[in-house]
Length: 516
Image 1 (cartoon, rainbow, N blue to C red):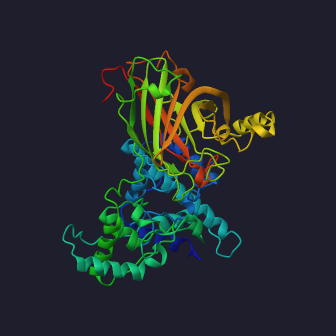
Image 2 (cartoon, rainbow, N blue to C red; image 1 turned 45 degrees about the vertical axis):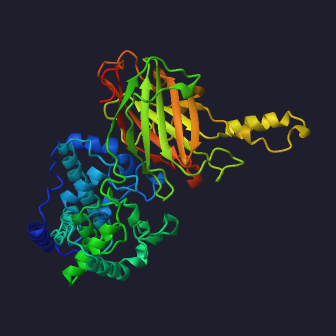
Image 3 (tube, rainbow, N blue to C red; image 1 turned 90 degrees about the horizontal axis):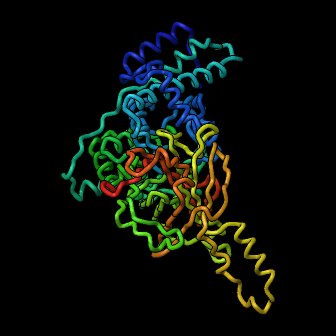
């Protein structure tokens, strides 16, 4: 337990530590302006972290693990000797997100906005910790004032010296160094990450002060803090305070180099980018006509596909983490094709793998910067196209039909009747959990599952996506925003348990620059 010293000593300690700590901007400073930054945080971050940084936002109950309480002072990505993040550490998280978690990347925001959010987060952390310290000692003889509590919180959250990474050996790595690194990994890391570095499943997680924890599968390459040499060094040396990853001490610098070289050898080549969402521009190529009655005839060849990274709202190794999307339009209708790997085909309640349906949804907004976690708001609705491999109303309809047939007509369960699935739903969202379904049939869907992958073609009138035909017309240069959600039935995804993308731009091509 931290026992604060008398007032003068607390302030003296504050100035002493702040003076020798890594350079960091005071939380009251704001590169983008306090009102703008507060508005950005309220729009994109508070839905999870809450406006006070307590981690108890409206979406928090649906996320696993839950959002961080900034006041706890335990941030996952740190590089310092005292476990407090530098501005660069916080900025790295904002730029990359936390791959494998619902924390998205904000790299699409201007640099001054990102720095403003860094300062805002640190300010919330100081305010939250100060309040907790003041409350903790309110009934003790060591009672402290709010000014003293804030000074102490600022001291605790001021980053220490950045722990220096050893020199990167580059390609000068031989079998002997890697073997020494493997031996170090077995001795220091395998108890959690396993001898094969495959980590542990989330359902085998263990409880800790910050909730539940599990060791990451290193070979998957989806690392929270990045895969650069210095990133790996900081995770080993500084640990991950909010994730039960302890800091390590190396008396022999060569052992540290060997361990880092070995860990890096296990990672896929794109590990630093894997799971990091990047904002894309999807150009819907102009075609002569789209036949909603014959979706197989739609030609997507003129359309350039974009790769979309998805973030799981509840982490597990069975989540869908990426998809390819293409789009075409004819001035009246929009067709979107979504393709993604899913080895299990969950499209029948009787013959499926789990009883849960595979699902996919596209969300559209005409706002220039919609809230990052979509579903709209009371004053800015969004349009949704949703498809489910099977739905309860389809099942009930099939059972009603079965009830009208004589027993001799049913030698076997009519599994075909339980594979509905070419009709989608159109809905409007005006906030978390607030959906109004316009009804089935307004979106035509062609689902195909082959070679362990889904290919879904959605077609609907542009107006059903909420597009205003007077402002969003081919060649106007104007754009809309879209995002993607996927539910994996075999992972028992349902409701808010899904994987989602950040917002991307949608441009209606004019036939001349569609492949830009």
